[in-house]
Image (cartoon, rainbow, N blue to C red; front, top):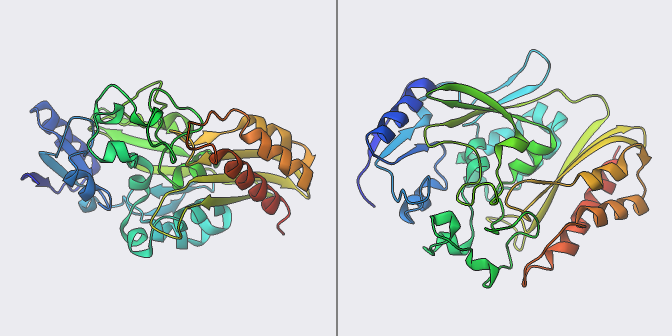
Length: 336
């Protein structure tokens, strides 16, 4: 690993300014939060953007006050700092009560040691875990011109939204945040901007190298969740090939607005099956204004995978995803 300069800013403005200065000087730069994935990326020469190799400058965000706080908004919602740890998110009483799927998603990540260190922003913006990308193949994500999974080992790759790259987004938090219609606050040298969770992530067809809209000198500073209305309940269900330290083969974040046993509105977002958190509006529409029965939940599961386009070795993800959606919807709708 080559030598790098470590910067310890005191404010977020200073942090992004240091990043901008480094980039203008022709240096590569990375922001460090929890660092649970950063060290491995640095060892693999995959840090930050394709082609950057290892960073010349590392901007440490832990020295910036306030990025690890969870606070209430004036409208009754919650704002989560980007450096909030996954364990803190899991244990927060309001998050567990009002945004249950988000707490469950955080709790499903890796191991207790990782959750004690890993951050919300880090989980949301982590790079893909495709074995070709992580093992020095010149693929789209590494600045190359092909996706090796198309004719190679694609057991863990996308069944929705693929092309030209077929990676899956690895974040557990991202589907839950999109399902709760979260707002992302991005800070850069030019100031702040806010985006919906749906607009934060980008498909390979829009940008084959990157997974989100962040520029090299921008930080995901915080995420805001609006106060849920009475009757809203949510859940996150994740299927893995082992108990811990791994990502979803398929997952579903489901938010239902219930009036008794009738669903007024639904939001269903899939994880582990697409390059972005994958919302399924056709399946959501089947639930609106309906009493949720086992038969309807089964129809919703079928609708959720209607647009799937599996590769040669990941067809198993279609029935797996269908079952995850069906079980999560039914369990959530019938919970007290």
